[in-house]
Image (cartoon, rainbow, N blue to C red):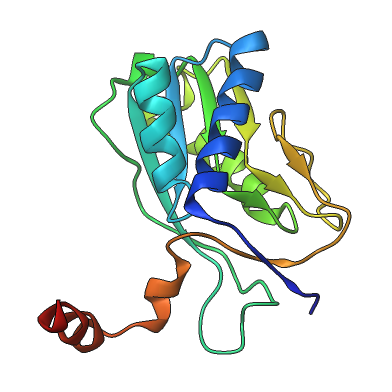
Length: 175
């Protein structure tokens, strides 16, 4: 595995803003679909900027200790989570945090095109992410940072995966 790329919260917000600028120049989505969990903060910001309804699909791919440099089998949720109407899905912007191998984005497009409540309403699906790794076989339509390597990207909230609630409680008792 290559070295880690540690992203500060301030830098993260700048990259999301750059992504929003790219999108605004050439696409007018009618709904934002986020791949959970990585897309959750991105979708939150983009939905506020573009004033659009959101939807989420849950996909599990990385799991277990020592799996940070490998992609596991993709497991999709049964349903999409959204209060958007089926007709809102005309022009979908599918968002993930990064294009690692590209498999998640590719399979998510297929999943959306076959998801019964919305499949007949979809006219177009475009993709967006913050980072594209060098070895990714998928090129998102919108992506502000294309990396020359394949580092593990440590995002601003990722440290919570290593913390137990007891540690957080202890930390706040001191203050």
